[in-house]
Length: 102
Image (cartoon, rainbow, N blue to C red; front, side):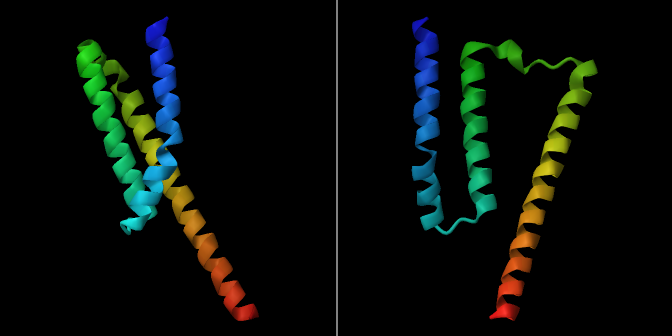
């Protein structure tokens, strides 16, 4: 039970400190995509080290399940890319519209 409590508290503390790191990375001049890439890489390293220390068998993937991993990764990447480009397009259109009006 104590182990689960430590995991929950660690998750809360890490979630709560993301704003500090975001501001720090913004001050370094990183773009939104740069911050996302760094956060993803840090999460990958932490997750990999945790799994290597606790359960090495978690890295084993059955060949018949490989399509799920590839499909999920591809769909999530394309969805994120679509949302990012849509946001940038809408932001550019709004900026252009404000420039024309004023």
